[in-house]
Length: 453
Image (cartoon, rainbow, N blue to C red; front, side):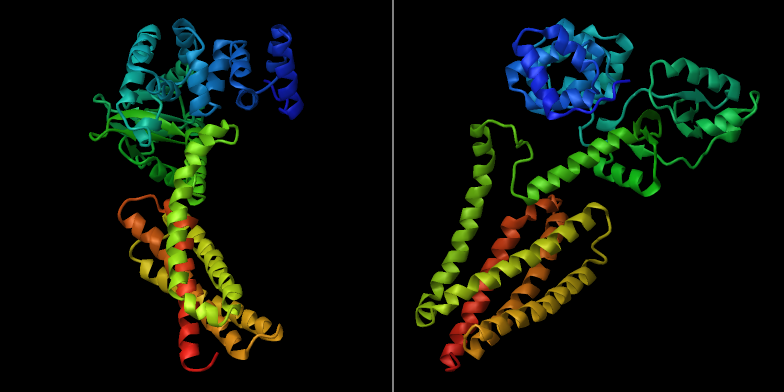
């Protein structure tokens, strides 16, 4: 098995070989690399060279590499090969991966591929295509090892031997009745240790955890995390066994969910990539920046309300970014913790009130600490002691606002079935900017009217 680690010089070497027309040498080098490493090379190359490299691969290797590149590059690679070549590539894939690739094709091309692959495989893929991609049905694979409940251990082992040629990572044999309803599962180690004539049903684990085809992929991932699963059977509404999900599928789900949340919290389109052309990156990022501009304009309008106050004491203009900035940082800390907790199911609406109170308390305490230090520093640098007190009070108030807003916005979005990650720094920072400016400048106005400044 190829194990050589891909390095930057591999990328340059493959590029130079392809551009020099030395395809045989390039193919030999690629043969020493893992499919994921070839995917990295193809992703790093310009599209024309990426296509030339992809065409050097055998169907089996190409089927794996297609799954290692992003959707945009995958479409370019697929469009560069003939229908017959694509059929050969798809034929090498497991049914769940084949369904993912075929679902991205135009209708006519998808039909041609389905007609070209093995009949049984085509039927299995078509069954998977009816399920939404982000559900258990959309993630499962039809390949599995199963036997009727009347089978013996010897017959079951023979069935595993037959299926082993076509199925990777068999960890359990599923037991079903004559209608196909799941009765349980038998781990391979338990199967091997049993006597050949033993009825399979007698060693079947009837409490096997199952998921239904319509379960959201995030919920499935949580089950894998909670119970350390290797695979899980997927059943329909009538309890019939229709597929299985393996841990490698869930690793992909977790990676996708993590990066999706990361992008959303950064105010980025989830399809944006580092190697995108500049024009595409501009189109992807500009809408979020425009939204950020709108929220910044609201913050600026709050400052405009206190224009007269700032004119009387210019030092306020120097200090107010400290209040807003500290509030934004505190809110980002809170929202990161809350979004993660929501994703892992640690927070529900029963304990949400406690979480809100706790985060407000944390914000208040941190406000006392940082506000006190900031006020003291301002005083030591020559500011009026009342300015130091003003800074202390405003930071304390805004840090508490940050704790409340940073936990409340994700909870509200979750309540309305919107991804909490989009509460990102754009919305939360806008809230703490507005809260910070209003609190600081509002208190300053009150202090001035009282003759304290």
